[in-house]
Amino acid sequence: MRIQLLTLFIRGTWCLSSRDRGPANNPSPDMMSRRDALASIPTSATTAATLASVVAAYPTQQASAALAGGLAAKLSKRDPAALKNSVFNVPPSAQVYPDFMRGEWEVTEKFSGYVFPSTTIPKSKIIADVQLPGFQKCSIAAISDIGRELTTYRMRIDAKSGLEDRKYNLANAIGGHLGYNAVESVEYDVQSNPNRVSITFVPNRTRNAERVELFFNARESELVPNPRDENYRVFVCSEYMRQVTFSLSQEFGIARQVVGNYAHFWTWREQPDGDTLTGNVLTAAYLDPQDSLFFEEPSKPVVVYSHNLEAKKVV
Image (cartoon, rainbow, N blue to C red; front, side):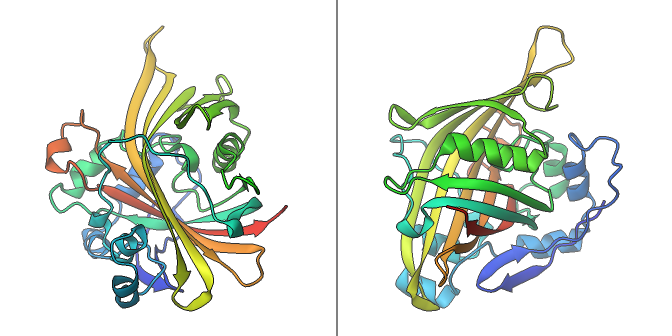
């Protein structure tokens, strides 16, 4: 299984291109395929990717002048190390989306690759850490199969409030990535606590997850004009979270519990027709404080995954 990374800046968006990742008869796809794929990358390719930039909706020179200090400017640095983990402080409020994103959308998501930003931990050590978010299915709830080449799912944002329908969106995203209806229920109350989600999976159907608890630590967002055409806007937002995944273990009566820390960084670009969005999402995976490598990289991501997005309005 091989993935070849190329440093590209296409249509204003940084992405990492990937080729077909090998035979479909991998003997243990849930547990090993992503880690094996990472391990197979030649050192030279990894080094080039580490020095590469991360998604930006703006050319660097324009962003540094016009967007200094905000989330858009952080992304425009095109530096994976800039996506540092957030220190939990005041519980964040729910994300409100701009008018051009409201409604129901069919999202097409394409995996475009990943980078290893750490300069202090060798890739071999990172690969060996099987519990890092993204190395197993369901370890990143909203992108439950991080290396899936192409995924489609529905996304719904309320027309009046601008709040996302998180129950609907998570159930659809998880089912889209896993290829079947995996979620039995999603518990979420945006009014009482917008920073806690409980996901229960259909019993005995998903190997790596029976239940997932999500705790959101921080959010950022910014709506800015598109410097290539100021008649249209770009919305960038981020969400930092801690995920606790419970699943069956080999020991009778004892649940397997895995803790992961990661953040999503979305870029959504308004299009002239009003019925299409383009963008991308970066997912930065961080070491957990209980990880033996934590003090070698306590705040910067050790893996950053990239997916390109296109959404078409349904309602």
